[in-house]
Amino acid sequence: MGRNKEFEEEAVLQKAMELFWKQGYEKTSMSDLVEYMGIHRKSLYDTFGDKHALYLKAIDYYSVSISERLKTVISQADTANEGIKSIFDIMIHGTNERPWGCFIVNAATELALRDKEVEEKIEAVFARSEKLMGDLVRKGQESGEFSCGLSAEALGEILHCTLLGIRVYTRTSTSRDKLNHLADNFLQLLKIQNK
Image (cartoon, rainbow, N blue to C red; front, side, top):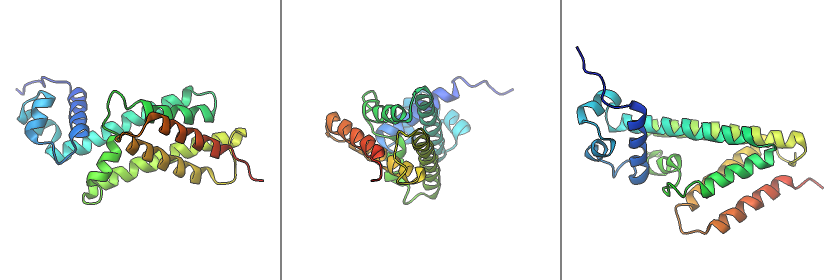
């Protein structure tokens, strides 16, 4: 008879994600993971596979959690403008508890160009994010909050790129005041109507 797992899978997956997030894929060894996750090496392999498979699962885990968080923020906003402002706030100020930037951006810059599986996951996450941003912009266009000079899809892509840039900035010494200023300027651009 097999032994029951002595750990909660989601909790240890979150720990693996945090360690990869802090250190990056290349700098994280299996020994680091075993120690940080608090499980035996055999349990890690039996449950998650090798380091690469665990990393891919960590990307999925992060992707689902950030997507749910953004959807919750958007659903709680009364207007599209408030929704976008809240997303900027999360990206700028939500990094204080974890000042490691964005796990997806980190994965993209570290591995996507040389790891096809990581690249495919990152592309899928970016596509979902762009769609979410596009839908939010469309809501603002339909309510008259935002300009219709560009399509919601195009503005969603630009918004997504702006948010990615901010996530990179949060890993530098750039002041939060500058990032807030960028967010405010972007929202003003959305409101400029065609003459």
